[in-house]
Length: 259
Image (cartoon, rainbow, N blue to C red):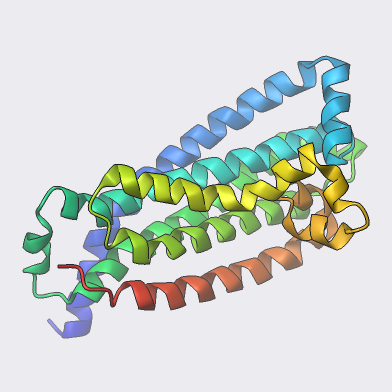
């Protein structure tokens, strides 16, 4: 068998071992949480719904549901993908069998790419599937709102692309971490950064007064509900950007000495 064929087989083996468990759990958890949200949110008192509308500048139950759907996608995709990356990159060092893995006739950088790339692809696809689910779940509300299927799905793809970029940025750190708990804390710190503007917008909306572009560009994931018309184009751009970030970061992370 040629070297290219051997590497292809090796990538397939690693993909079967590490790509699916976390994203599949994310899909199941996302479906359950989305169903609960759609069952419970419309039954909230009108006063509570009005508070959410005023706090996040959204209109009606459909956009409140969309914001919750996007939050669910953002949470389950990141932690589903992170669980696989911890198992693929941190656990071997923590369990002291990294030397066994490195004894394979496969370069260390190939090992990293073979374990990471399938996870990132699976996470992005899971985001698309959850977006399709959210689109169907919101379909009964679309006639009375500005929501459209392409916008709802596009926002989910944007979140999937953002998650892929965040997980890729973690790779150079994870390949050197020796403790799973430390890796989890560091990963949580990175995950929370994109959500901080939304918290600021909730508690200090005055910081965004007269700065509409700042709010529209940073207040994730609510800004995806605000800009539904532009989501299809944004999704394409976000996917290309995430692929570029992942390629660059993986090239760096894969060259870090594992042993």
